Image 1 (spheres, rainbow, N blue to C red):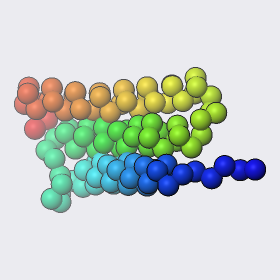
Image 2: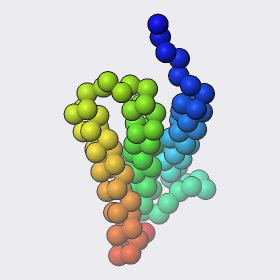
Image 3: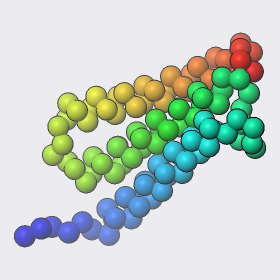
Image 4: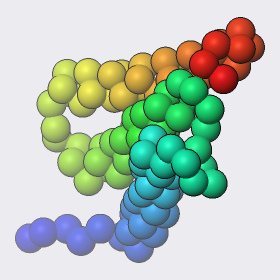
Length: 105
């Protein structure tokens, strides 16, 4: 007999999926919008955009995928989660460093 997920799991999944999707769409808009209202000067656009997309992947993996697929390989899950959070943090840290140094702005 298949155990159906509870309403709490479905509500958390929906909220986390919406959060990750909005973060990914915002990241894509910042990454690809070079002349519009979300354009950032110099190298900041690609850094913030890629960082936001990686953050969205991390949010989805941690809050949705881990709960729906608990038997996934822990080694693979750990590598993917660490990789995506590393890309996110690298993008944010480099963007802050560039703003502070005035490089690419």
